[in-house]
Length: 184
Length: 189
Image (cartoon, rainbow over all chains, first blue to last red; front, side, top):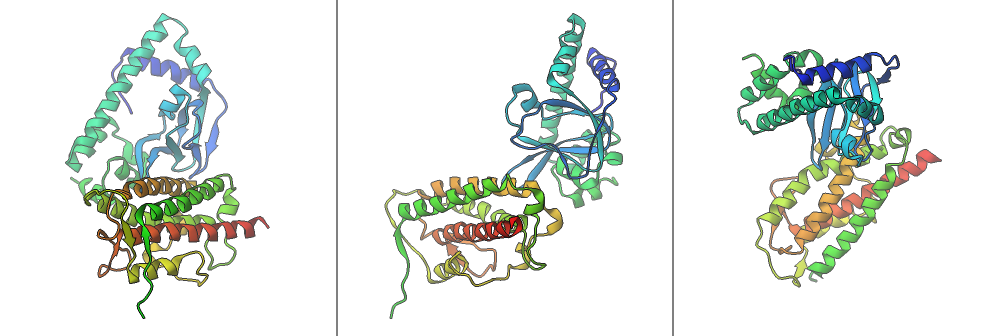
C-alpha cells in the first residue's frame, strides 16, 4: 500500500517498477484463478497491471484475507518466496487481472547490482516492516470505525478497486458492519 | 427386552475413530490430484458433485468442530481407561448415517451446499477440518465421553454425549467420502 514520501525505499520501488515496465509480456488470470495456492513454492514477484487480488490464509473454519492488491501493487507469497518453502497463503484473482512477473533470480540481480540498490532495498524493507506493524495494530483495535479509518489513510482508493465483502474480511468485520460504518 | 446399548472402552473407541479419520484424510488428499471437471461433475441433476459432498461436510464441521472443542475444553480431565456408553438416541443417529446404511437421506437446508461458492479451496478446507478432527480425537481421550454433552445442529432440544457426537461426525465424513468416490468413478468412466 502506498507511501508518498520520497525516500530511498520509494526509489527502490521506482527502479523495480522500471524493470516491470520494460517487460512486454503480461499474464492474465481470470476471476477465481490462483496466482499461487497453499503448498506451492513462490517463484515470482508480481506487479498488478490491472485488476484485483486477495492474499488469504485458510483455517479449518474460515478464509482470512490478509492483504489486497490492485492496479500498481507488488505482491507475492512473501515467506515462501524468501524461504523457498511451501506457501501458507493463497493469492486469488477477484476479477480478470493482468500481471507482470519477475523471477527471484531477476529480482535479486536488481537488489545486488551495487551499493546504491542494496541501500534502497533495505529502505524498502523498512517501509514493508512498518506496514506490517501498522497492520498488526489494525487488528488489535476493537473499534471497526478506527480500523477502517487507518486502512483508508494508507489506501484511500481501496473501495474503487475491491468489492466491499473482501474489504470487510480484510478488516475482520461483517460486510453489514462495513457498509453501515462507511457512511460515517 | 432391554435394548442393546453400545459400550466400549474409551481409548478403543477413539482409536477406531482415528483410524477411520486417517482413511478419510488419505482419500480426500488423493482428490487433490483430480481435475476441476471431475470434481464438479454431477451424475444427475439432483446428485451432488465431489465438491458438493465436501462442502456438505465442511458445513457440518463448521458447526461441530468448535462445539466439540468447546466441550473438551470445558470438561475436567480424567485418567484413561473408562468405559463409554452410547445413548439410545445417539446410537440411532450414528447408525442412520453410517456408510453401511444405504438409505438415501435428505440433507437439512442449512447443511445443503451452495454450488456457486465451490472451488479448490473447498477441498483444502476439508483437509484442514480432518486434521483438526484428528487433534480433537486425541484430546478427547482425556475427558469423559459419556458425561459431557454437545449441542447438535438439528435441534436445540437434544444434546448428545460427546462420544456419540464424535462417532457421528467421523462416520458422517466416511459416508460422504464414499459417495464422493462413487461420483468420481462415474465421472471418470
